[in-house]
Length: 159
Length: 159
Length: 159
Image 1 (cartoon, rainbow over the protein chains, first blue to last red):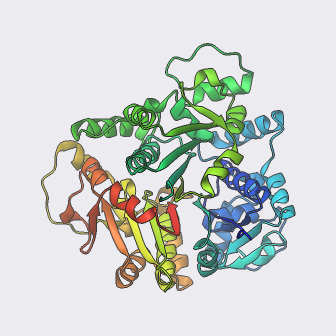
Image 2 (image 1 turned 180 degrees about the horizontal axis):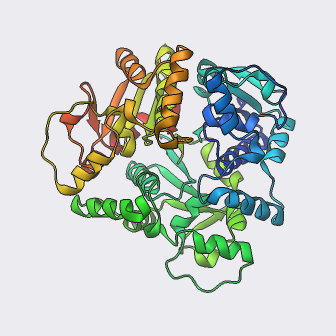
C-alpha cells in the first residue's frame, strides 16, 4: 500500500493574493488525496479572523495590532498594486467575472476537504490574538507540530 | 539506476530580485541534471511577457492590469529599495560590473537548458493575459500539473 | 540506523518578521536533530551584518547599498505595518512582554545549535558586502552548495 502524501504550507503572509495561492494549492492537493495542513503564522493569522469576533480583553499593544490588522480574509490587501484598496476590489471583480473562488469560499472548501487549518500559538501571543477571535474548527499548535508534519512531507511551501 | 531529481519552483512574485533568485536556483539545478520547472503564477507571469506583444482584445479591467503590470522581466521592480525605479537601475549596474546575468539572460539560459517554463492558466485568466502576449516556448497548465510534478520533487520552493 | 533529516532555508528577505520565522523554524528543526542550514542571499544577508564592522574599501554603488541597507538583524524593518519603524518597535515590545526571543538572540541560539549560517557569495558581490562585515562563524558558498544540501533535504523553504 502506498503511503499517503502530504502538503504542508506555512502561510506567513497577510496578503489576499498570497493567501489565495496558498488555499488554491492546498485545495488542489486535497483533491489529489494529500494530507494537507496550512500553518498560519504572523500576518497569515488574519485569514482566520472572524468578521465579528466576541469582545475579548486585550492589553494596549494588542489592541493596536488588532485594530490595524485586517479582520478576516475578505479584508486583506494585495502584495502588489494594492493602490489603497483599489487592487483588491479589481481582483474580486475579476474573480467574480471568471467564476474563480474568493478567499472566504476557498476557506470553506478547505474545511469541507478536511484540510488542517492550524494557527501558530506563539505568534497569536505576540499579536495578541485569542482563540475566540478565530474561525471555528481551527487547530492550535506550535513550530514543533509543523515540523513533525513537514519532515515527512512531499510539498512544503512557505508563502 | 538513480532516479532523476527534480526542482519545482512556483514564481508568484513579480519582483526583479526574487525572479533572479528563482532563475539562478533553477539554472543551477538544471546544471545538476535536475528536471526543473518554474511555474509562473500571479505577478510572476510578468516575467514571461513579451516586450512588444501583438494587439489582443481585452475587457476594461484586463486592460488596466495589462497597463499597470511590467511588460517582461527587464521592466520589473525590486522587492526592496525600489526607490521609484532607481533600485532596479543600481542592481542592473552591479550585475554588469560583476559579470552576473540579467533576467533576460537568465531566462534565455533556462530555455537553453530545457527548463519547463509554465504559465498558470487560472491566473492568466484573472489578470487577462493571453498566450500571444507571453514568450514562445512557454507551457500552459494549472495547479494539478504543478502538484503532479512537485509531489515527487526534491527541491520545492515558493518564491 | 535512520538517516539524519535536514532542513534547508533560503533567507532572501531582509524583513525582521520573516527572518524571525526563518530562525524559529531553524532552531526548532535543530532541536529535532535535523541538520540545519540557513542560506542567506540578497537582503537576507543583512541579518548577518556586524553592528560595527571594520572599515573596508568599497566602490560608489557598493557604498550606497551599504549605507541604505540595515546593519544587522536588530535594525531590520517589518514586511507589514512597518510604519516608518514604529512596527518593529511594537514587535520588540511584545517579544519582550511574552518572553519570546529577539533576532540577535535567535541567531546566537542558532550558532549554539551548530546551524550552518551560510552567506551567498554571488549576492555579497552584487551588494558589495565583504566577509569582514559579516558575523564570525559564517560560511561562504554559492547556489551549488545550497542545492547539494537541499536536494536530499526534508524541509526546504524559501523565505
